[in-house]
Amino acid sequence: MWRLRIAALLAICVGGGLLFGGVLAGVAKADPYQPDQVAINYTLRYGDAVCDVMDEYPSVAGVMGIVEAIVEDGLTPVQAGQVVGMSVTAICPRHTTLMMRFINQFASYSQPAAVITEHAGGVLR
Picture (cartoon, helix red, strand yellow):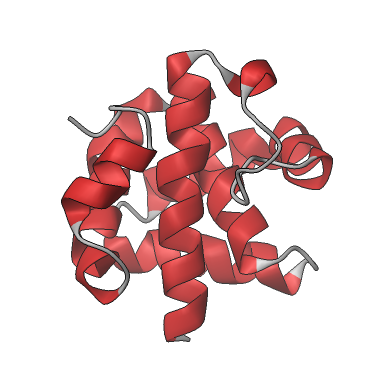
């Protein structure tokens, strides 16, 4: 469960940061959290539903439930985090604060928030 949260946290930070910064196409392949085509396709198909669920369950537990449901659909935790980050950034930026609460709650389990912020391209500043 903690691995799922950590992977999702990192992917949300980076996935959201990449789209927010408008550099999705220009990111180097060396970045292990670059959204792959599976995550992008899932977001295109279900991004509105992700945002709808966040509307209905606006809590950290709600975000974790979304990540778990996406993993149950067959995506990896990293891909699930990317889907949430891309959905919030592109479709429902009104949930940026909720995404930040999720990130802040679990940031101490993976890396310092400053490192995550830096890796996310400044979107969290």
